[in-house]
Image 1 (cartoon, each protein chain N blue to C red):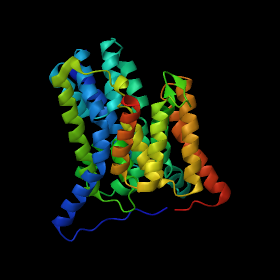
Image 2: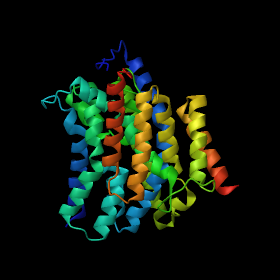
Image 3: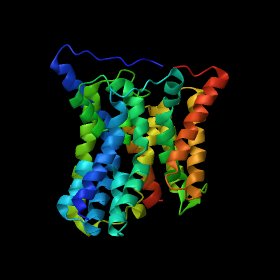
Image 4: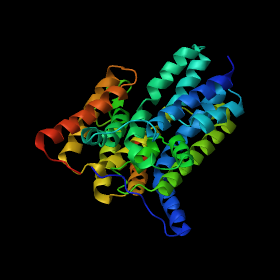
Length: 104
Length: 241
């Protein structure tokens, strides 16, 4: 099968999943309850993507001090609480991670 | 829950300012994803795609997880139907994002819906969702989305040029950048107990799914966490926005 056919079909599918439910002609009325449920989507999804990166090492749950991801993750949480600045938190967090990983 | 407010512009200067504000907001996320763009480009070449196809993956699909999955599947000779089912599974979280953004984006003209729909990645959703952005601004969203699009595509191009000489990123530990960015975005949104319950549920559920090797565990952990936050709000009558 031609690679371009696959690429374009997949692109259409991905685009559709991002675009379709925002179309105004769609008779989709979101009730107050549904809206309140949906208001939790950002923290839910972002946390569910980030947490395994921090806690899972080699397919295993790791609470050890040797897990640099965990230590740096805690540092990022503290930085975020103190600075309230995303860019600053990410830069300082990455720096502390690289120091933990390659220097210490 | 606030209804969508429409930002009115008195002149084009404000649009430009909003555009660059959005671009600035997405810079940490763009930087964090550059190594992954490099990896995606180099893996595409390694998987046997020609340079144009490799760039096309990022330019027209524009979804890292989907790109990595279909590269592996095409290389392994997996059938077309199976590829589409896997893609649907991975891309399904975008249905959630577009439903959340519906109030803000559906009143816009078609060209805006097409553009912002195309650009609606995890990252754009992270900076432009109603919890993050009190008043939705289309120019802000466009600036953020385009900045991320160009960053992702430039990184892919870099990976294509570097070809197979890119080192294993897991060994370098650059995957931490994504985690750091998402943590930095989530922490300020934890303003009440309901969001905290949601976040803690997401942590536990996502780790359990990962340990149990559940495919697309996000489809279980994210709705579960949303339900937990919602149920807590209902039970206590608190956490109104």
